[in-house]
Length: 158
Ligand SMILES: O=C(O)c1ccc2[nH]nc(Br)c2c1
Image 1: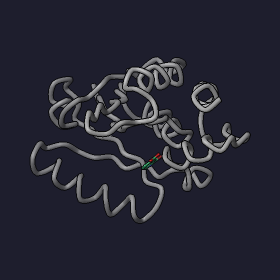
Image 2 (image 1 turned 180 degrees about the vertical axis):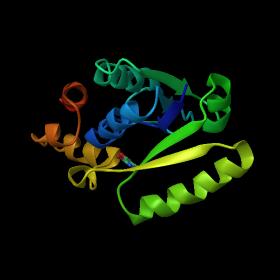
Image 3 (image 1 turned 90 degrees about the vertical axis):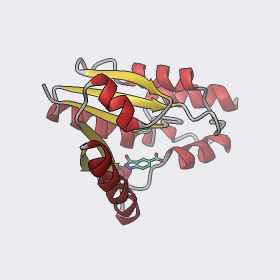
């Protein structure tokens, strides 16, 4: 059984993230979206809010679960028996970053990283960009985030 982890802070989940999750769910038997809990970094949404938003967004994907990770992703993967780490790539900068991490994870923990290319329409989408435009009341948020996240952003900045 091929189980993969898709880690991230998802503060908030974007259409780019969701597309990677959907495609990974067709490749692997099970996908666990691992929401990072970084106590040193105050996000826009709390860890439980971020978890709930992901859970709602992936509710229609039967082989996708959602979990929370406080420590190293590779330790979490070992705990849950996942051998594959999925990451999305939007551009060359993402590739440079992900390649270095993938090499460390492979050497340290024998983890295989699978990189999925973001679709053109998501190549300029990031959680930080979305938070910025939501703060200024953008009304086209649905181009960048799932409906459940649009509602959460509008509530947060109303
Ligand atoms: O939203 C982000 O910050 C972010 C970062 C890095 C990323 N790689 N692939 C995707 Br989709 C992606 C999204």
